[in-house]
Length: 604
Image (cartoon, rainbow, N blue to C red; front, side, top):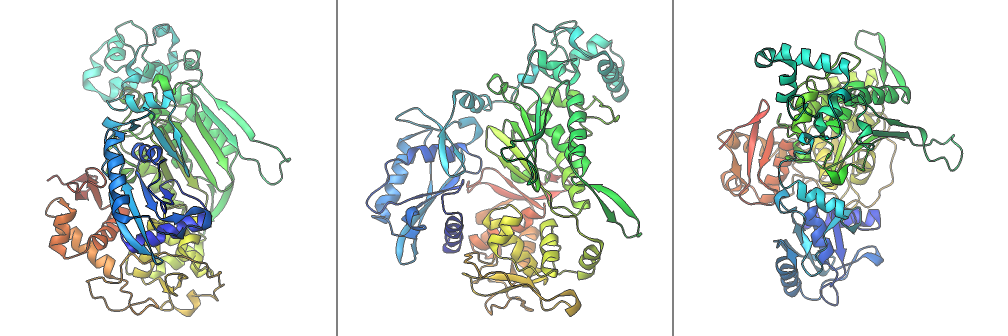
């Protein structure tokens, strides 16, 4: 962490008016806080970990009051993390002079799945982070963490009280036909042998497995009442006061039927709009691309937690104002959010269920799973083709959620304008939407961008800096009140009169830090110290280095001459473009960055 990042975090806190999920603030003016252990446990158990800041007064708009003693504060934190937690933690800490006072910041990294949950040694309790607080894990949530230490196999377990008669004859016939037509080995087997070998039943003529019953059963909810999709529409402004939900539905039956029912419900409760293509013909397009919704629903149904600790929870599907929200019990298993849809690698929580669903079709003659590792890339592609921004994924360890923002489809004239720009750097989906908004008079700040396209401060800085790098936008004003507007280098007809937004405090800083070592000409920014192309050059230099094989951060810095901060910003740019992946744990100095080659990473 450096001063720029600390400044941005504190600006976020002041904007929110409270702690946020990934940041906890402690006063620490009169001594080390004695109630910190639950937060250490929560950050260690929560995907992504979290940040501690000592020396701010939350009750006074996070003003800087300083810590009682920098060295003693760091030592007390290290001692609590190592001796007061089970397993021990190893926080990284820094000290800063912020607004004339000494503050301490520390990063608590997420523990490996095999070591969770992290407990407070004195009480034996474990915690998880939720927005601005720590909550004690329930017994069921603790069981979920423990179950995830090994490869989940709950879908392979037998349902003793069920029989082959509980399977749907039509689904079963179609499944067997598809299995035999797609596998020369299975084609030679008897039907009962195919069902056994593919995990539909636990033995030849025996009871079905959990996976077999969910995918092919007549009514799986006879045995698992809560393995359903619970759908609802948030009330609108015209609904009566006190209305909690509209068109609330419970979808049950086998997975193919639940998938089809939920898709039809989404179509029924969302709008269609006319969009004109380059051929001049208007076409009806749904509010949410049905292909993207189908893949997200399929993922939720297949990858939900099937352990006994999660059988009381349903998948939830909500249509809210401006977004679709889908949530299922069980966090990601075997991969992280930043790898979703980028590496071509899948990690199935329920291996048998996923394999069975590859050969199960629903009413539209489509497979529940079209191909392994294709779900999230299909979602991203279909949203991009619809002119929409990517979804937001949130992994809380015991639950996974995806939010699909419903930003207005780009108009034909805006698409033509974007095509005419020829930016110096390719724009991603969010940058395209942000650029169109600037064309129509919007001026962005770090905060307004985050509010419109939910993301964290670092992502917002990268998006805005990328627009400047592309010569599409320019930054105006100093760090505390910087706004981003359409570049004056664009033709006048492409830059209508700008509407001025309030100059609100914004501590964002450009991601090509001012001391960038790469000289760049053609500066677009209003700041004379800004080098807008440096981050692109740094990223290309790192990509060239990684073409020879994976490298850790130390090797990257040594070879390129960049500071750690410069290298991280460039790597985040490459990661956002889907060109690199981190091999290893976040915060581990031995972890290596590797280039992605056609869905695979080059090994070391």
